[in-house]
Image 1 (cartoon, rainbow, N blue to C red):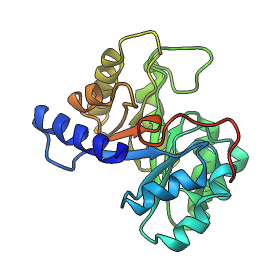
Image 2: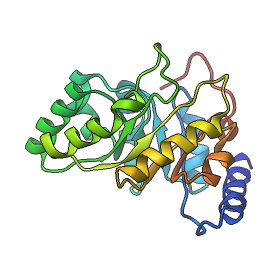
Image 3: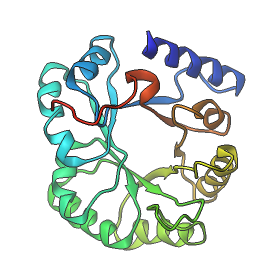
Length: 221
C-alpha cells in the first residue's frame, strides 16, 4: 500500500535522524483528488489531510468528518482574506500565513470565535516573485508582529523550496529561522524530498502523489 510505504519511510527517516518515533506528522495532501481515493486512505486509518482551497475543502470534508470524527484537515494553500471565517470553520491548522493583512483578519475572526487553529508562517526562502511567503529578511519582524500586535500564537514555519534548487538548503534555513524565534513547528518536505526534511527537523511533511497517485484534472467533489 502506498500509504503504508510512506509511513514506513517516515519511520526509517526518524530513526536515522535520531528522532522519536511518531514525532513527524504525515499530512496526506488530498487536494484535487477524487473522494473515492480519499475514502480509501481514511479507511486505512489515516486521519491528517491537507487541502489547498477552502472551497474544495467545504465540498469534501464536512461529510467525511461526519463519518470519521477524529479527522484533521490542514490548509496548505494560499488563504484569501475574505475566506478567513470559512477557513476557521474548516481547518485545524493553517500553514500559509504570509502577510499582515491576513494576520489582522485572522486575529479579528479568532477574537470573535474564541478559538484558533494552529498557525504556520509561510516563508519564501527562495525569494521567488511568483510565490507567496514572507521574505527571509522579514521573518523575525513578522513573527513579532503576529505575536505582539495581533496576539496570534504561531506554531511554526512552512516552506516550499524552489523546484530547481537543493531542497536541503531551504529546509536548513527554515530550521534556523524557527529556532531563532522559538518555534517548534516545521512544515516542510513533500513527496520527493520529505526524508531530507525529516533529517533537518521537519515536524509536518506534506505528501500527496506518493500516497494517492497523480492528481486528476477534473474530480467529482
